Amino acid sequence: MPVTAEAPDTAREPADDPLAGGADVWLLAEEDVEEFAAATGGLELLTEEERARHDRLLFPAARTRFLGARLLSREVLSQYADVAPEEWRFDKGRFGRPSVHGADWGLDFNLTHTNGLIAAIVVRGRTAGVDAENTPARPEAVRFAPKVFTPLEQEVLRRDREDQRGHAFADSWVAKEAYTKATGMGMARGFDAFSVHRLRGGGLAVVDEEIPEPERPLWQIQVLQVWDRFALGIAIRASEDDAGPIPVRLRSAMAELLPGVSRSGVR
Image 1 (tube, rainbow, N blue to C red):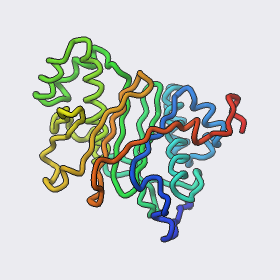
Image 2: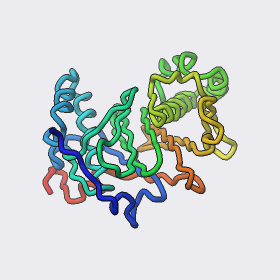
Image 3: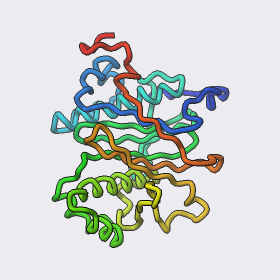
C-alpha cells in the first residue's frame, strides 16, 4: 500500500510560506538530469508504475526527460511541505493532469519538458500551468498555425515581421498550452476555441467565453524567455483574495536544490 503524506493542520499555511505572495518556477536543463538523478536517488524515488512507464519509452532522450520531470516535481514539492521526495503520490485528472494525492497542503503544480529543458511550477491556494518550447519555432511549425490559432491570432501572426514569426508563434503556443494545462484540459481543449492577445502594456490576456465572467480577472498569462533558447508560458488562476498580479520567480534546480553537489555529482 503506498505511503501517503499527511500534513498536520498547523503546517498547511506556514507563517513564512515562500508561496504566500507568488509562484515558483523551477528549471532543470536536460543535460543536468543525469547528475541531478545521481544526487537525489534517481529511479529509486519513483513508484513502480512510474518506473514501468520510464522503461517503456523507446528513446533515451524521452527517458531522460521523463525521469528529470518526475524527480524535479518530487524534490520541488518537498521544499514546501515536510514530506520526503520519495513519499509523494499523485493522482490524475480526467484529462491526465497530475495533482498531489492525499495530503491537504493546498499545493498545485504543473510540469513541462521539451528538448533541452524541464520546468515545474508550484503555487499554493491557486492553480497554475506551464509549458516550454524551443524558440524560434521552426517554419514548418509556424505553417501549422491555421489548425491551432483563431482567425484573429492568425492575422496578428501574419502581420508580424517575417523574422519574428517563429518567436511569436512559440510565444502564443506556450501561452495557450499553459492555460489549457492550468484548466486541467490540456490538448483536449481545442486551441482555436479561445484566444491569447497582447496587451498594450506588453502583457497577455486570455479571451475565453468558457470562463465565467466573474472569474476572468483572476487569470494571469505571461511568456518568459529562458536561456535565450526557450519560450516559457505561465498561466495562473489567482485566488479571490489576491489583490494584484502574482509575482513569478524563476529558480535553478541544480543551484538551489543541490547546492552541495559538485560537478562529479557527489555531495
